[in-house]
Image (tube, rainbow, N blue to C red):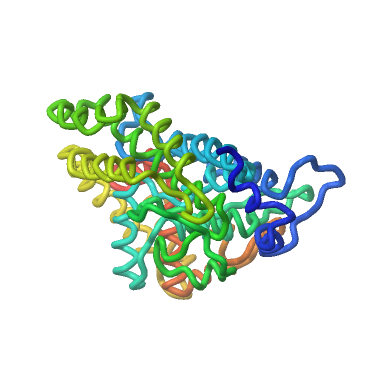
Length: 398
């Protein structure tokens, strides 16, 4: 039945509405603006540089020369498409789902989840804190990404609470077959300490969370077949899928969307039929055993580990207390391009001599070692695959 969630849509009649559209600070107003609050978020995300870089970030397979292998930005568009379809059918706010969907992976590091694990190992080693892309995504939209306002002053994205919540709450690694939003309005910066700690605040964000899972399950199989990784496992795969005549990626996605829409209710939450949930778990298990643990992925992970650690420790080597700026200048003589670009990036966020048009939060006292090292983590996490490789090659090249 269509529109069965319409009484719980994120709109002015929802008791959570004022919290949903709340921003960290007042946002400038235009005399004329045809957009809603969530549409305004959507376009702010669309214009930010972190979104543009997703086209050169790995989803699962590092294959930059193959135009037919899914990149992070294509995955994001799949999630937007799937969440839009589900939200529209259920009678929820499609503007909100679209904004959350295109923003949900802004915090991903280069080289996909393998890159994320490496940065987390570095972060735990340095600060005893894990790095996780959902939290990094919230930090990026709150602190790192900058947009010019109508006065040409650069400020952070300043998104609504509902979209920010959808970013940090989107972790698709859920094993339970029911998802409902939480009632509590929490401090997203302070209260969230680990992935999947809380349910999202809105039904729309719950839809994106499940759409994330639907999107990657089928597409990862398609890419693995294209790359020949599953040549010896196709019979086993088709045995799993043919029970429901689920024969390719688009059919898998359509099948899962329809089942979710049919079975979800306000009382039960967003859920699949037991039969389909069992199929999802079989597909997920197959993918983990035959795709994510593939030999070629393991080989590339070792390379990414060397690369990201070398970039981190080289940039860290410039730390020298209250003489860090002087040390950076000396390092520029050895690695001119690498340290010139890093210093330029740092200058947007440090507390030292703020630029006139920078109205974003000053984040880093670079004379403080923890601040300086955290800045490096943020900087690396924003890199594309190709840029990270380019930086590494410049570090080792004479």
